[in-house]
Image 1 (cartoon, rainbow, N blue to C red):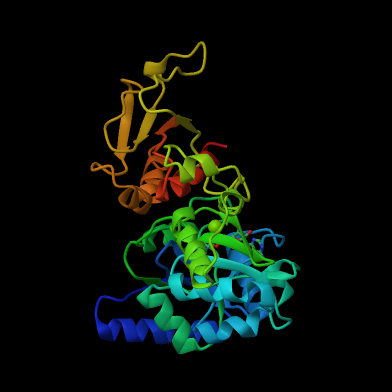
Image 2 (image 1 turned 120 degrees about the vertical axis):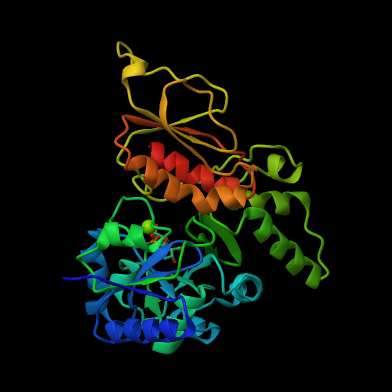
Amino acid sequence: METLILNTNTPRRLAAAVKAAAGELADGQCVGLPTETVYGLAADALRPDAVTQIFEAKERPFFDPLIVHLPSREWLGVVTKIPDESRALVAALVAKFWPGPLTLVLPRQAIVPDIVTAGLDTVAVRMSAHPVFSAVVEFYGRPLAAPSANRFGHISPTAAPHVMSELGGRIPLIIDGGPTQHGVESTIVKVDSGELTMLRAGPVTPENLGEVFHALCESRNYRPTEAEVEHFYERLGVSFAKMVRGEDNVTMVAPGQMDSHYAPRTPLRLIAPGVQVEIYSGENEAAARLGSLAFCEPSTASSHFVCEEILSPTGDLREAAATLFAKMRHLDEAGLDMIIAEQVPEHGLGIAIMDRLRKASA
Ligand code: TXA
Ligand code: MG
């Protein structure tokens, strides 16, 4: 199959690309589309035959469920059943973070095919804020299932050429919307009995979610006890003491989902900044091709780096997240024996970055 890439540089090209994407979707095909987090591989979420194409192109196992991207907030009630005790919380989250990089896991309606949810009784939903994605899903008028547009277990694509190198020849169309804004996948929280559980760290941070919790309490004129606040943050996978008392290096206590995700093919070792690396015993470090992935300053871990990437020279976690996967991918293509990645400060967006680095090193 030949894979076409359409750009969206002018309003006319955007309109033509949106139409072409909707045409492929109506044909039951899948299409590579930009979202504000990473590129997605989209298909009509309500058509099992179309969704099957996603699993085939990605070589993704059928037990791994997909995120459903909605054309509008009105679709939330069509694909999910929100229990009364979760209603106020969901409304507040949707009002604050949609469209945007927050995915909610909620009980599903029967309209959602089993292949989308891997047979679970819940479905993951979000609304993308990307102008290209939202134009396509609104024009098409039906929800789109879209996982990241990479082959299973590979690094998520943050630019159209990454999608081409992952899926070229397997899908008919990629829409190029330029590099993505956030660079890491959406935050995923499960909403159950009026409570949140973090399933995947992302651009919407525990601090951001905490603001909604406090605003909801305030709107009910309720002052939560310290134990309640502690409970809220612990379910989001962060240590209460560190979060609330403002100490550095918040620790994720919730594991990610599948450890094989986000993996470069090159072995990646995660180290604390300033630590010297020793290469496998018996081997000569100078003979090994080492690459460095540092946060804001050139790494001093070794004097033998043949390739160096710095995530953000100004130490900005947003910039670091936005460039992480592209830089990891670049190092992965350099024929290295090992990538030495330095830890980043683990607060705010740094929680999501460290989650991806840990998975890449697993
Ligand atoms: O930013 C994103 O979320 C991107 C863009 C394209 O929207 N999508 C994305 O999809 O990262 P994917 O398939 O690569 O990751 C979705 C994750 C998977 O780890 C899957 O296991 C989890 O969401 N998931 C989906 N449905 C779920 C459910 N009902 N319960 C728990 N986890 C679920
Ligand atoms: Mg993925």
